[in-house]
Length: 153
Image (cartoon, rainbow, N blue to C red; front, side, top):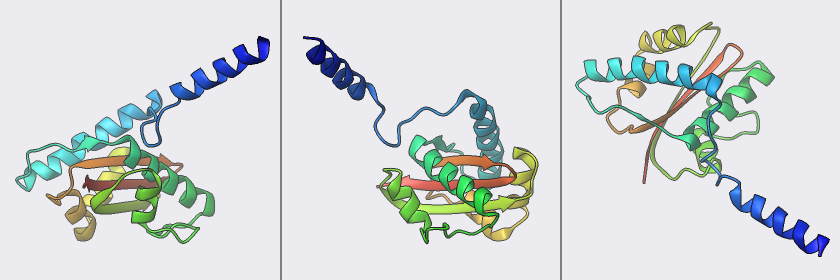
C-alpha cells in the first residue's frame, strides 16, 4: 500500500510540472523584462508600430540559455558554444517560429544601457522595430545580454 501511495504521489507531482517553455520567470527578473519591453516599445512606437511585444516564456528560456552560455565561455556570438543557431535554441525551447531575430551585447551594466547600445546600432535597431516580431524574451547573465524577438507560426 505504501509503494502504491508513493507511486501515486510521484505521478501526481509529475503531472504538475510545467510544460517545456511555460516555466515561470523568477520575480527578480520581471522588473528587468518589463523595463526592456517598455524601452523597446518606445522604439517600436517611434517606427509607427503601436502593438506592444508580448513576453514569451519559451523565448525567455532561449535567451537565458544563450546568455548563460556566452557568459560561461566569455564569448559573444549568435552561434552557441555547441554550434547552435538562434532557430535551434528557440526550437529547443519548444517554440515554433515563423520569424526570429536576436540581439546580443556584452559589457553593459543595466537594462537601459543594453537597449541603448542596440538602439545605436542600425542592424540591432532594425531587429527591435521589425514589424514581424510579436513576442520576445530578454535575458542577462553577468554583463552579457540577449534579446530574442519572434513571431510564432
